[in-house]
Length: 490
Image (cartoon, rainbow, N blue to C red):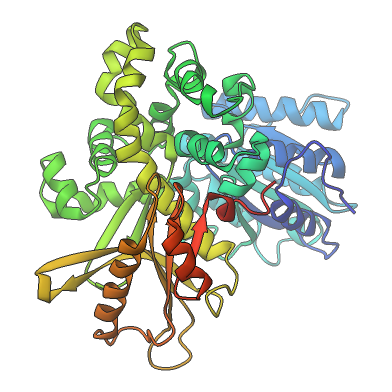
């Protein structure tokens, strides 16, 4: 039984799935795919699996096909220590050698950065498909557990989809995601939920952003947060300084960098609908389908359907560092590159950070809490949590709902378990409750949801008035503060 290394934080689910895949004793070689954006700890996971199970790990490089074959031959020679060096001249030979590694027992075999190999050898997935033919002796007599790993999300997502050669061949498809906001708070060692939320709004939950990339520099307190942003993110001497730009450069399908940066900048400015993005970029709406799909496939943007308007879709930046870069760094890029006045630039940008980043990020944390951590607090487990807008004909306006918690549809209409408003730095009071009541009445005039038992929820990072707390004690409203969002994360 493979035990998770003691120096590996979290990743219990990922380790368990890998262990089950690798330790399976059944005859026949199997194939798995592991994907995830860079710096999430994929290689750390897979190297640990190979070390514990006596497997073979190879990390590909950007190289020609001939050099890649020579490199894998060198790695195999080092691993097997044969009489003569292994010098393969084609990939089918390499694959058969890898299959022979599992003749005696289940053996993990990892090819990391697989997209590098497939880019210069496009037929490689088809070669693996041929090697894994159901009745081929080299496969049936092997218990090699081959794992293909890559960080190019758009490429890895297509590896097993549609008519791809490897579709139907893999028995594991594992994505290593960023740490959720609660796990990130534990990883950073934060006890103050407000500081945890501020840092997460800048760098998200990528593990490497806590370690080598900022030299383990953690803000010591709320008072140190501003100085930390300047020295760890905005300083040209920090590896984090260029990281947001590299996130796009690492995706091979993002060829027109200027267009993709403009799309992200539009979203960061609050233009989340197709029309708003198109207006900001200066393109027609139908011309944005491809770049938005590519950004979505790369995991950099998420598409969210409006809870109350079926024809409306919003796009949100999935990686906080990208949102921070486009809202704060990109407007002052020339000055930041020069390294002059960095502290002054941040001082000037703090209001923009609060308006363009913190508000929307706090709403995101509230939705994530309602979906993953609230349990049945609102009467049942939610199946979907999103934002939405609903028309108010009497006032000739629309009302925005920051958090709409939707349950499972046992009947004709799904239950709307709760609606909520989220304010990052505002003390919420009876006015917010009255607004939610009005919205609930509007929703009850809409046949899309069963709103009979819809709860009203106020989410605040700034606190609640005593009057609102009294209404909460009477059961009229649920109050969720930062401490509630992070409860259990310490």
